[in-house]
Image (cartoon, rainbow, N blue to C red; front, side):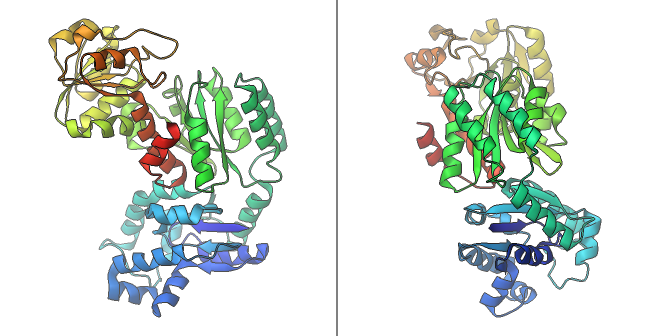
Length: 461
């Protein structure tokens, strides 16, 4: 078995790792010890002589040189901050996050010779670094174990049980199979997913990911993420959770031990009720498109806004119109606000536009008001134009060459609005561009790996 232990100092990586290696009868490696061996000096001496930058460079070389065979690898607390380290650690290995509460960590490391990374007191430094690293820790992990009230031996036994038995119950797997077979996803996908569920006893460390939506049959996420998992040698399978009831989906997600969810229409708001923690973007937008489950906790993130912001970054400060007032429009308003744009939200039901505009400090109106605004940027955040709909929210006569038109709909690739915009000689941004960029951010949240944008673009086609 090939296992990596990550987490903050004082969570028990070294002691638990040594015991785990004995239980599994594999070699044990400690990244700090390997750095010291390379440098011929202790960690605190390396920091004094070369600073944190020099230490991180040595640490990166050590990670790159780890042997590929079976073993237990205990890593330093900051290793996961570099996506290249995470990629190297994750290939062909199972990553376990060890965590502990701040009081426990302080007790365990208060007499350490490891140099401080800030000028704060120990408790303040622990809190600040945990806050800064928590999302990176969570993203890089396959499984999470809280070590606060557990001995190193207990932790090692828990990890061994996860590796040998997994985290799902037999009855839960049976319920998941029944759900899959009646879900309405294509027969070939049913067969493949059913085979993966049945294989859990032989491959207990495999993790499941999927898209939760209704409809979700049009989504390109399953083939994209499956290709990415394969390329980066991650023991995971990505599928569809296609059902009108999110509560039913979430129950099956728990039965299957699902690690991560891409959340789409109509569940981006409803999913918030099921989360223990949310990032600042999900809270501000009021919607979540990325959910992670690890240990007994669930976490929510929003990467949709990144997919809208990045293609428009060069137009910072422009006048913009957002068509629609739903969840996608909230993500768009949040993204455009981060670019200091002057925004007007237009919707057929003006009351909804008023409510959303009030949240983000925007102007508002109905679709009838579009012609009087003459925006530089137009973002379609309605579902108008999504297959099988053949309508466009705007006519060609309403568009001009000075406009950049961004249609968040990505099926079909060339929507009626984009055709009208091209005909009017506008600059156009297809919805596929948002999908690609939010998927890149989502994959990093799922795995800690920064997949190249061009790789994702090539897979999506």
